[in-house]
Length: 358
Image (cartoon, rainbow, N blue to C red; front, side, top):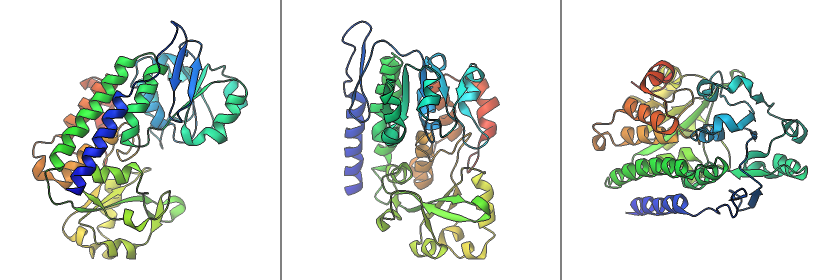
């Protein structure tokens, strides 16, 4: 009952964020936006030269490109890829003409592009945003970090790109999918004990990490009808490295492996040959899974988190989703949010499937 109540509270917050009125233009030209920091940002007209920068900006860029006007109005951005993959370069025919900023680009480099708006994640307000604002360039902050923030931030982008109808349509797509999933998992009394691990072998040193309780990886497990067993440890505000002894002590029902720089299927295959991992109950019961993705992993605070949630709910409660076709769900996702047809999906998206995907 407690878990179902949580789901109802979540939906109330999400629905409220989607429906919350944003400040409308008070003149035919002027635009007034309330951003993620609850700041009122007044623009003299619809921005035509937009720059997106900051760490992990691909998550913001992928959300921005839900809006058809993004390709024309975004004139510069940082590295929009993760590893060798770059979704924006794949879908924007004008990408080569855009300025690509270095990860540590400062206010001067950004100002050189003559933007009339810069978009940043809110945690960058002091380090990157303030110097930009001090030279007279308006900044709008968004988060796109949690499911609850998606409705609000899509509405902000709806104002930035002057397409509130598209913002409402996209928000409804997320709302309908999450509502459907949570209604189904809310009927299940059992919540599998889940461990989601980020695998990293940087510099040849293998490490397993868990996410903070507030991050989308943890939230995704809860929304999919599972119990994220690591969150009670209160391990901190960032990825936290844990030992194999701790993994064994948690004794999860199901373990999911995330990898950002390689196919997690390969990681799982290697782990299954390791005697230490073979001793784990989840491995013995064939409940060690490679978390899926395509160009990017579906566990992240990127628009694809909706696909990750859909897939995870099917893994945790297969009896409740007997007809789940995750490939069809992915094709619908790209069609509805990016207008990409079946031919594009089959040519450019499906071949990049990784993890436990058909």
